[in-house]
Each structure stands twice: as C-alpha cells, then as structure tokens.
Image 1 (tube, rainbow, N blue to C red):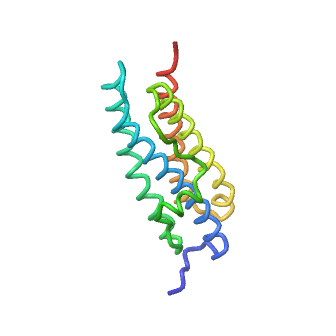
Image 2: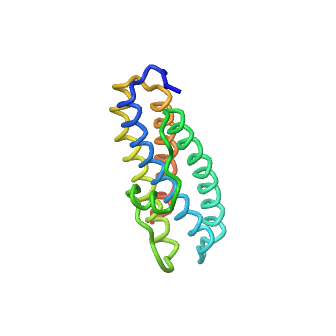
Length: 156
C-alpha cells in the first residue's frame, strides 16, 4: 500500500538510510557495552559492572525505537551482524581490555553515535520529519550525558 505521511519517498529513504547507520552504531555500542559488562575487572568492578548494565539496557530499548522508526518510514530495517558491521562507524575490539580502556572505548562509541545522529538532522528537518527529529534529539541527549558520565570516571 502506498505510504502518504507527508514525506516523499526519496526523503523517507534518505532518512531511513541515516537511521539505519544510527541503528548499526547503536547495536554495535550495545554489544560492546554488554561485552564490557561481562568482562570488566579491577577495583572499579562493581561500579562499572552496574553502570554498563544500565547502559546496555537503555541501548537495547533504543535499538527497537530506531528500527521501528525506520519501519514507519516504509523501509526495511537492517538486522544482521553483517549489515550492522557494514553500516556502523564503531569498530569492534577483540581481546581483553583494562577497565580504563573500556571506559575510553565507550566514550568514543557514545560520541560516534552522537555524530551519526547529528548527521541525519538536516534531511529530517528539510523533510519536516518531526518524529525522526525528536528521536534524534532524545538519542543525542542520552548519549551526550552518558559520554560525560564515562569521561568523569577518567578524571584524575
């Protein structure tokens, strides 16, 4: 059935393409955060273990919201590791990491998600896609706050 929500097909596709990159970044950050939750050790174990759990739970909800927005625009959402790997600006880290390195990598991941979200704004605004703009604003606020909290752990 034809979609008639006041956003033309070309703009819906362009917005969905940006949101697909955001979805891939978010899912990759979710996996990284969950991995670090499982594998963190050292004197800050308890604090980081709980903080990472809170963060990956929030990211799991975000993944669903982003994918559902892509679907509402009439485009199929990516959903495989292969697709996410191609689309994500966040790279995986193999092997053990120190707690401090985990924090730094998560700050970098949070900031990457912010940059990706911000890059989608111009096309969403041009198309008067307020639901996507609202989603992007919410995501940026959460990731900016999380990045700030993680950075504060690195202060000497």
